[in-house]
Length: 104
Length: 104
DNA sequence: ATAATTTACTTTGTAATGCAAACCGTTTTA
DNA sequence: TAAAACGGTTTGCATTACAAAGTAAATTAT
Image 1 (cartoon, protein in one colour):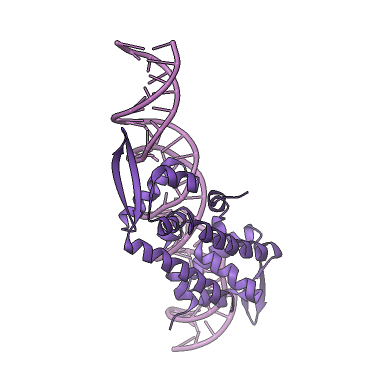
Image 2 (tube, chains in turn yellow, orange, green, purple; image 1 turned 45 degrees about the horizontal axis):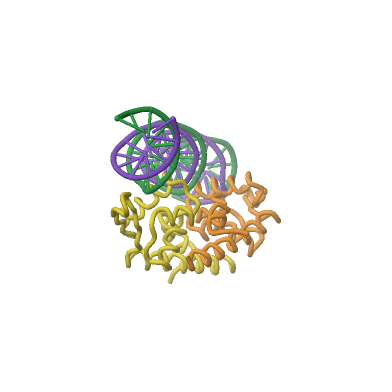
């Protein structure tokens, strides 16, 4: 038996942060994306995108791979199976919270 | 013309905070609720609920009315028309963000 | 040749804020 | 009448999201 209170307590703030939720949701659909693509997609500054990607990597939700392309570094992010499941679950949790809170 | 980047930038963090999103969504459905009801509904500590309600009131999203019931104070929160529209819009913005980010 | 600019990021500094814990005035109970 | 409960508010701290500054390599201009 769960309650609205449990729904609320179950929200993971790491994922709920709008920028990270956007990044994770996008990566769930395209699997892999490089830094500059994610930057133009989200409109984030490079600094903030960098920090968010690092946090997501530390949490095991994405993996980051750096390669040399041409003569420059290239940073690619890929969602992990854990990350993919987590973001799917997060959207479901939000749906559930909305549903429950909408009928008190 | 809007983009995913605009969707992201348009998210209001005051509303996005899980506890406040829950409070606002609940008040959208029941219009009026007292402090203790909201506390048991959300599972928040009294201190945190108090702070969240104050912030929502300051933002004009809810109104707070204090009366004496029996011999004790009673705090009731009510959603304002602005608040009701804002939370509706927030859920729509999340839907839109999810939709857009899911098809990059 | 080398200075200046651009690219692709990372690190730092700071202001905001969410939470737990402490507090407060009143009322009820022992 | 002491103490515990009620119905909250205020405070202190640790986290964190952002902008701005920094960095290292590559490119362009002079």
